[in-house]
Length: 211
Image 1 (cartoon, rainbow, N blue to C red):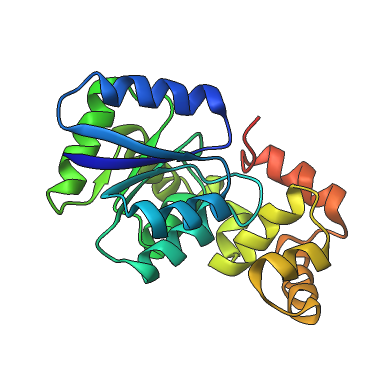
Image 2: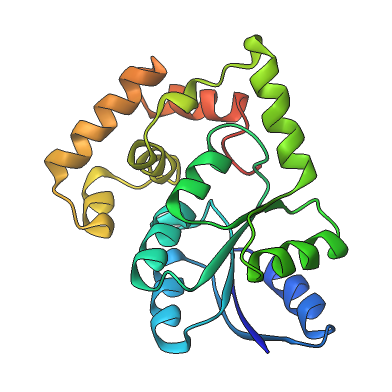
């Protein structure tokens, strides 16, 4: 029996996934979380075999959550399930320790295939994501300015887009406000924006937010 934890801030998504998995023999949904913090707490209590993880969520988000879970227990497999099929997300989530990357547009069969492949020790990237990566690689005009951000900068950028202030981000990441302010400055500098509003407009342009 594969024990699964569902991590997504949309209840409808979690309900749909739970229904799919519980209709198939061999899967047990042992918990649900709508934030990274909840996922970390549940993981330490329930110890799932597999986590289906969104990226954009309130709090620390999927990137940091994946990294911390893999540090806590590298045997736990993480598959990213997101709307983001392009940009810096696939590479950064894989670097953080995710073993699979699929989109919310994929069908039931591909979702189950991804789980099977990952549980058998393989890396799985959906066809849709692989095609988007290949297209970005071959088309020089598709350069995404967010690709220049480090994992930490990308994470903090997403938290700023949630409306979190420097102090809030510092508390959630257990870092000093000075450190967060430095990262914030680097993000603005790399993206060539002056403030949060300009960054939000750029993020929408490059599909960095889930609309």
